[in-house]
Image (cartoon, rainbow, N blue to C red; front, side, top):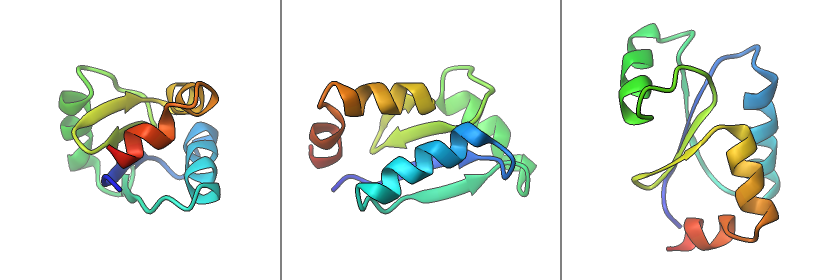
Length: 85
């Protein structure tokens, strides 16, 4: 399984929803809390092509996007393929 990274903040409902989906699927991920470590926010913005909102989700070197993008991949049956490739 490819490594998963998710940039979050503690009070973000979309972050919690994305993590719940990953947890439900049994996917291990590295959470990067940009509120606790604000120095990581510029890294997130650069990696995501300028996006400033959380969550920003990466599977391997692929930028998935945010929570809606993650759920869309799941709905389309593409998330498992991306995780496995």
